[in-house]
Length: 227
Ligand code: HEM
Image (cartoon, rainbow, N blue to C red; front, side, top):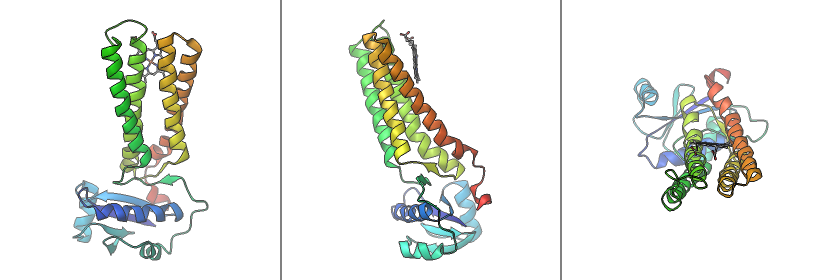
């Protein structure tokens, strides 16, 4: 069963509708997409089905519900879909920024400030050891990597319409990246090789975890075809 929620960026109730459907998608075996009516995919459905309001829910290419459905209404509409075997940690991404994505972006901003401070106060980029390598890695690993983590897990699943694993594994990925950034930078600063190597291993593990989470998202050509 394919459930498509039509939304627009400026519509506040759309976020409530997305939340209702995301909870259903965790329990029921449905393919769930959030489509912006301002984007070509959303516009095409709006034109074809004559939808005039958001949020609206389209199930298997038929307009089924206008407005925010109650959990009971959403349950009834998807009564025909089989239950998932176990509650999945995968979730579909729509308008709402996940807590993990928000924290990754907050961390990126924090590291950017820190890298800037190292640059100015520690004579980072322009200077020599010991400040240069820590400043570069607080920027590269701290700011860039966390920014990519935050935006990547929010945007890529929206492009492919496939769910991404979240929860514990997403938090572990961030914890490893924090450990990696801090230990690698301290290792460079203090010229402590074991510290830097440990940081490098932690950072690498975070990259590997992110790749494992993204692989199924990028591989999914069309989830609908399987359901
Ligand atoms: C697993 C993660 C990483 C490890 C283990 C690592 C390790 C290293 C090492 C050992 C050096 C040589 C440092 C020195 O000469 O004192 C280096 C340099 C450098 N790294 Fe990384 N790095 C990592 C991630 C990154 C990332 C994500 C970026 C940027 C996006 C980055 C940017 C750089 C740059 C620009 C240099 C040259 C610094 C200089 O010219 O002094 N690194 N890295």
